[in-house]
Image (cartoon, rainbow, N blue to C red; front, side):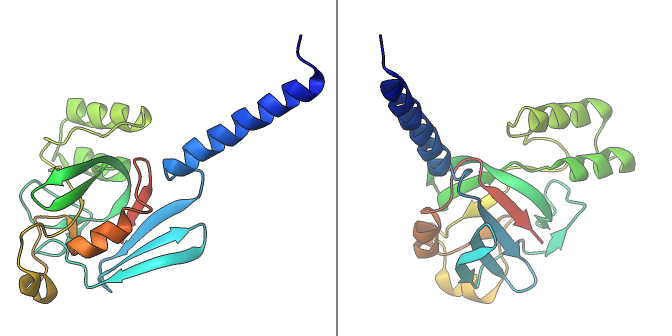
Length: 188
């Protein structure tokens, strides 16, 4: 039979392990990513403290929008999470976002850009804390990525992506310190 001290010690250790798992997933620490498309910056924050700001990011070649459509080459504004991480991407590393978010899906249903069934699939995925379908008329596979073998001069001079947010490979290496599946990402 365990003593009350042993029970307390084991409970404390279990609590610490759960906290560490949450921190490793980027959730318990309050880490989030804020992308300012106007200033072309990506900022990593923990609660209200700025941890790191990356300048000279690139967004979609045709700007940004709340009304994204597949193939429009615009970066969608909204609130997402990192849904998956591809470390073997042609863009070096790809942090896939849970785009579309619920407001985008609601607007698209209201505007007739998606049908009820597509809206329901998006809604169910988001409610289950999963990545929504990436193949609707709203587009998909939106993320934060590096350049891969891309041209650094082009990156420094133009917004060039198909709707993603691009950083340099070196910036991606630094960002990976804080980016975890589940990390909130706000694009404004």
